[in-house]
Image 1: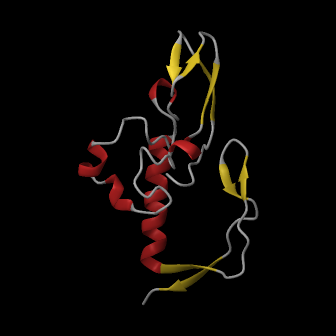
Image 2: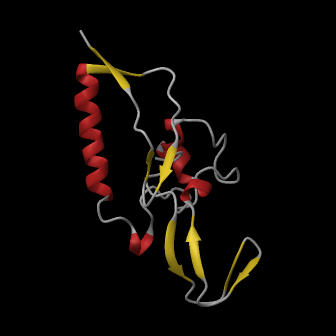
Length: 133
């Protein structure tokens, strides 16, 4: 969710007043695009940003991070209405599948990302399921 956010670009935000972002002046009425894809890899916000490290979301490590450094479903008044459902669904799916199977990525796949409104592998990801005993 951090490295491959479901919505890697959030558009349609308009500056309600004059502001400044990273030293650049923003005029009132300017359309702003927020890029979680970039934000989630920003070296000022994340140590080793390209590393998959679930422990970075422990309460202790999360406490020091700015509130909107992680936006898998957007944030504020426009947060995705389905965020909680999506997290619940994926937790149940992973728990159910992982109890019965071990998943292995089939070799020699060139996984190319397709960005429309959401981010996904263009041709999917072929996996091999091995039953757990």
